[in-house]
Image (cartoon, rainbow, N blue to C red; front, side, top):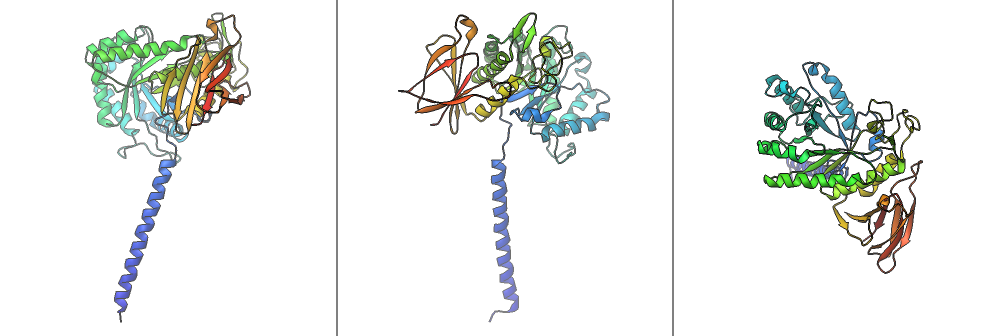
Length: 438
């Protein structure tokens, strides 16, 4: 007959086995939960501005927010303010791209105190468990992407910097950031037209190619065709990098257009919203990883409300001749939300060339089917009110949705029958989404 001691040992063994499998099960469930929780590091949808209404951003699918700081001697005294702001942004579901502005770069270049301050900041927000910022309201501030300067190829501006000197600055600050946070990515300052390729060429001539991870570009313009200029910039930058054997990701960290009137040229809310969709589609198709609408979620850039950058936002700020009142969402706001709803999570993009002139079609592959985006550049055919097109599509029917919702945020949608592999539709000013199940 077994002794009490042996019986106790068997019971303890059974208990240990039970607890082991219980913990394993909980671990696996937790792992599955982590996999199911959405992460937005791969999302291409961003915004640049000075905002505090983070919910209004995430409500329309914005996942990246670009900021800008110019840390000086008093930065450490204000560190709690930065901790709180970054934690609030991260806690809202936004990823941060922070920018070290280069005002007075001559005093910063080679400055050991500045280098130490940059190291301190990067280390504090890399969330690696070493000298990190404290959690605030349960959220740890986390920044893994840092841009160095803003539009240095504009002469006479605060961040203006000769390309030879910018190469030196990259060589100075890039190792500082990487030593503090090896997994962090460093962005080349956003370059503007029309010297972007020449400026980059000189930086690479001076050995700057090993001291950034991502190239950044900016462009704006009107709502009647300027959206395509970004593709030209991307191709020119790729050509310069190829000249030096470099192939690095490209981000568009500022782009946009306005609604209202600038220099006597009026653009409607619908035209701004349609241009927004076109910019994102062509830029992503050209291989851009992220696109940041600018300037801002809310309108306003310090002018009288009627200047270009006073009117590029997605929500009115209550100023300007065409303003509809503070907090009123523009049609571009709703168009941004519908765009992210339709396109977030795509796995591939392909342009489909059609016979019709001035008509453009792109296919976004998704795990549960395809989404086509089609539009007509109507200003090239001013005598027409609409354009009839035939689109080759596999399937029996497709869901069509107008890409620019109305002023109440309502998007018109209908189911259209596909006949003999051809979908016929009439295009006007707004792009159209076409959803097809495999």
